[in-house]
Structure formats: structure tokens, C-alpha cells
Image 1 (cartoon, chains in turn yellow, purple):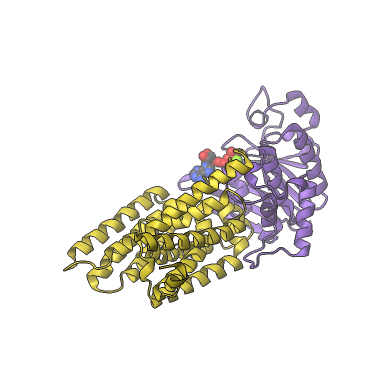
Image 2 (tube, chains in turn purple, blue):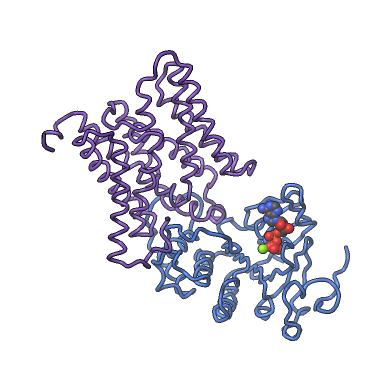
Length: 280
Length: 248
Ligand SMILES: Nc1ncnc2c1ncn2[C@@H]1O[C@H](COP(=O)(O)OP(=O)(O)O)[C@@H](O)[C@H]1O
Ligand SMILES: [Mg+2]
């Protein structure tokens, strides 16, 4: 079967659309996460959400809704406790991270019978996205884009120097909460496509590829969206033709692209340029 | 006498339980140029943070007759993330914010102000540089441009002379002298000696605060003693260059 035939399948069209929406949301929030060094926080939120997946199975509601509740709660807790300097930021994250996984495992164990699609929450399944998933992803991609376009400057300034932003009258605390909620929601909807185990890479690898060639916040966002989308399409097609899991193939494609980009950069710009100030 | 821009009355400031400033009173008037000196850990940065609104006093009062956005602030050098993807121009532009404003592009007036601030600090050719590619002095100049870009009524500088070379230090001081014609300046410095000709008042912060009018601390005296700030401040011989404070 060739590519044109493949494109006529409904599920493939859905998968492509999901890849586009995921790339937009992750390209934008991922840039915020990477620039502000919130990758570990994001890991904590991601894994905490597994608790919600487990409770969803146990009580019989949509696991993704449970994941959303847990992710947002974990995000708000991290932000709040860190802000009040009650606990060290990284310790809070570690606790929520393992608590979420523990609750998830206990509730799935307690659920009678077997948990269908469990693997798809861990590793993602872009091939099986539903209309509802797509609608939610569309709403998220639009919210993220609108927020970051309208509030581009305040977000950039807060991420760079929070105290200074405060002295300019920017509502820093409010925006911090808004942004961490957007991060949590982006993570949850990407769990559908990339899975809990793999979601961090779609939030960080495109950014680090773009960051090899530009050191501007706005450009990293746009570049990451494009690279994320290309990698998702390539990964999907490769996964289809080799009959291997799509989430993992997309991540693998991203890593290969990163290595290729690094090689290209070293060959064209030489080792020195930018190498001391890229995010990695 | 006209109303001060900022008036602090018998203010205490504490972190958790540790009291850092005790019974501090100070008024900052239009066109003042106040130098703040004192030993490390004496509470200078704490006082500055209260003035720019980042910290609240635990007791006593602080009153502003100016808007928060009328204050230009250069924080003491901290570990800013030098890999953060932001350019010199963008950093300077952040000094123009006033509350929450939407939109991506700066207005023509704003861009003009940014250009002037870059020009003033000698950063025009570095405007598009990511901050990670700046030297310590260039970064400090960027911070100065950010603090002054809004033509604030009050300019608050917390040790702007760290990491800068001697030449820029001299330029900095003459720039501040010029700026003082339009704005009030509050300057924390290691090296008040060099700028003392321009400074009108000196405040010593060491848990308490003491004022000195500028004629008390003359240029000659400072040249002769040429001491680090820690020694110029209070205490007895060998290095005291100020009158003993009246106890109150
Ligand atoms: N965030 C903080 N939490 C607790 N103590 C602090 C904090 N910041 C400063 N201090 C303490 O307050 C005192 C004054 O500090 P600071 O205002 O930075 O002094 P200076 O700027 O004069 O060197 C020091 O003893 C310092 O340890
Ligand atoms: Mg200090």
C-alpha cells in the first residue's frame, strides 16, 4: 500500500490532525517549560496524573478525566508549596511523582478484571484518537496559542526575571498559576498521543533542536511546532509501514532529528557558535 | 517643603523570625541622589526591596506618592539564567511594562525609548545578542538600560558597579549625574568614594539607618582613607570618617 492510499483512511487523517494539534500545544508550552527549566516539574505532573488514570478505571469514569484532575492538582500543589517555600521544589515534585504512580498502580490492581488500554496511557496511541479527543485537543491548542500570543511579553518577562516583572506591575502569581495549569492540560492531552512515559520528549526535544539554531523565545516556539509536526508525521508513517508502536516511533524520530540537527550545526557553524548558550 | 516620593517611618523588616531592619525612617525627595552604604548583610538589599514593593515591612509604615511603574529598578546581581532565550533588546523592553498588557509588538514610541536606552548604555550594536553571549559588564549595562528605559521618576540601583570595568564605572557615574537632573536616584554601592561628588546624601544601613549630609563625608577624606565601605561606616578608629551617630 502506498502513501496516497494510506492518507484516505479516516484513522490516519485523525492521527495527522492529532499530531498537528499536539505539536502546536507542545511546541508552545514546551518552549516555556524548557526555557524556564521546568522539565522536572513537568515530569512530576505527568506521573502524578497516572493516579487519576487508576482512579478513573476503579470508579468507572474516563481515565483521561481522572488524569486531568490529578495533573492540575499536582501542578497547583507544586506551584503553591514552592511559592510559600514550605518544601524544596524538587522534593515536592519527587513526592507527587511517586505518589501518583503508586495510587495508579494500587487502583488498577483493585479494579476487577483487566484494565483495557492501559498500555495506551503509558505509551500513547495516536492511531486510536476519537472525535472527542480531537475536540479537546483542538480546544487546548487554541487556548494555548491565544494565551501565549496575547500574553507573550508578560510571560517572557516573568520567565526571565520574576522579581523584576513584579516591580513592573505584572500579576506574576496569577500568571504563574495560569501557566502551570496550561502546562498540566497540555501534558494530559499529550498523554493520549504520546503516553505518560514518552510525553516529556515531545515537550523538550523539538525545543532543543530549534534552540541549536536560534536563541529567541518566539522563534523557538514556532520552530518547535514545525519540527514536532514533521517528526510526528514521519514517525506515524514509519510506524505504519513497519507495524511498530507509533508513540515510541515518533520519539525515536525526534531523537534522530536532534542528532542530525546537531551534526548539521557542527558542520556548518562550527562547534563554538551558540554551543555555550543553548539549553542543553 | 514638597511631599517626599517615598516616606518610611519607624519600619521593621524581618525574614521569618530574623529581624533584619529595625526602626528605619527615611524620606526620599524629588531630585535626591542618595547613596546607601553599609556592611555586607547589613540590610541594604532588604531596604531596596521594600522600596520597590517586593517585600512588606513587618511593622511601621511606607508610603509612596509615586506609582509603582514610576520606579526603575536594577536588582543586585543574582544568578539569572544566562541560557535563557532572550535578547538584549527584549530585556530592555521589559522595563517599559506597566501592569498586564497584551500584544507582541512594541509601539513606535516604545521602540524609540528602547533605542535611546541602548544608545545611552552603549549597547546599540549588541541589541540582538542573546544575553548568554554578553560579558558581565555588558549584562550589567543591559540591566541599567532596563532600569532607565521608562524614564522613571525614581531610579533604584542595587550595586550597579559590580562586574563592570573601571572605564564603564566612570561612565556609569557621569551618566547617573546626568540622569539625576531628571530623576531621583537611590544607589547602593560598594564604592561610594568614586561617586561621592554627585551624591547629595549618604545613608548607612547596618540594621538601623543613619543619615549623613554630603558635607560630612568629603571627597578628600574618602580619597585619603580610600577604604572599603565596610570600614568607612560606623565604629571607632582607625577608619571612621563620619561623625559618631547621635543615639536615639
Ligand atoms: N530571603 C531571605 N531570607 C532570610 N534571610 C535573608 C534573606 N535575604 C537576606 N537575608 C538576611 O538578611 C540580612 C540582610 O541581607 P541584605 O539585605 O541582602 O544585606 P546587604 O544587601 O546589605 O548585603 C542578611 O543577614 C541576610 O542573611
Ligand atoms: Mg545587597
